[in-house]
Amino acid sequence: MSDTRERELLVWATTESLRQFPTACPAERLAVVSGDASFRRYFRLTFSPADAQPEGNSAQPKALIAVDSPPATEDNSAFVHLATELIAAGVRAPKVLAVEYAQGFMLLEDFGDRMLLPALKAAGEEGALVLYFPAFDALLALQAGLNAESLPAFDKPKLLSEMRLFTEWFCGGLLSLELDAGAREVVESTFDFLADAALTQPQCAVHRDYHSRNLMLLDDGELGVIDFQDAVRGAYTYDLVSLLRDCYICWPRALVEEWSRLFYERRADASLAVSQRGYAAFRRDFDLMGLQRHLKVMGIFSRLHLRDNKSAYLADIPLVMDYFLSVARLHPELKEMVVLFENAVLPRAEKQLHALGSDASGT
Image 1 (cartoon, one colour):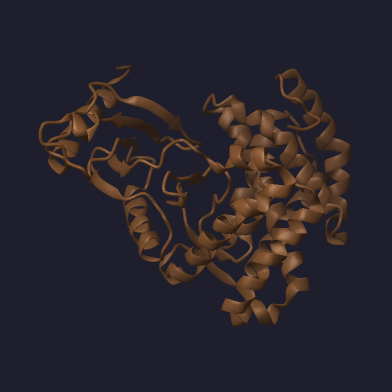
Image 2 (cartoon, one colour; image 1 turned 60 degrees about the vertical axis):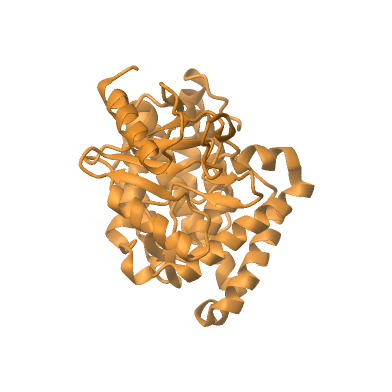
């Protein structure tokens, strides 16, 4: 094992798995599944087939997921609570089989490795909607089933602090671009406008990272939802724009509008506030919420490279920049920000990303 925490996690996960499946035969090593954009790490603890055991337990899974989730940086109680609430709401979240809060260890149901993203790429424009329908179903269940009032508010200070990651980590950190007083005024005015726009939208439970890498295709045909521990009470369009203007796959604007309308119609049927707001307002809400998220994401992807040595995300920044510019150009209130981005940010970003080995023309 590569470090002490991994060894401790193996001992704990083995003990807990045998407590629940006494006839299991756990592997002697953990297999790395992934890290994510936080400090959590995921490992797979595999078992010998149940039918190979003299008194095999037919309910024994093939594997479980052992999570190293340091309590100093990760809110594990929120994860456990939300997993329970999501399952009760009809969302297929992984069951938490055991948790050790002091150490920051969890043992979860294994959802496998089949993310929605490769399936979408394989399906293409003609087949993607079939895959998105279960994602719509899960999102509707999440919005209807979670008690939004019990979640932290995605308030203006939080919205602004997220967008300021763009200034600090993308412009200042990755691009070494110092914005003068006039440019900073334009940027802060944009942040303020987008934060206010988000707060005027109908509020509901928000997953906050609802995209094709956090949706899993399960062996039983259902769609699994992961990485939900940062859920908040926020704008009704946030998760939908995360899904359809995904930072890891891009669709033609006409298709995104068609698919988003299908979701809107179902959401409006279930919510008087959404229905009264109307479809024209929804389209604007969807656009502006996406702009807030994509400013944040440019900052986060830059920080992952600069601070956390996770440089693979650099390859996704060009798509995020394209999302931001293509949508911002449609809204006159953002004219000054578009000019600033086109003249100062974009040329520097293309040069820097190219130097770092990323294709600045797209992903």
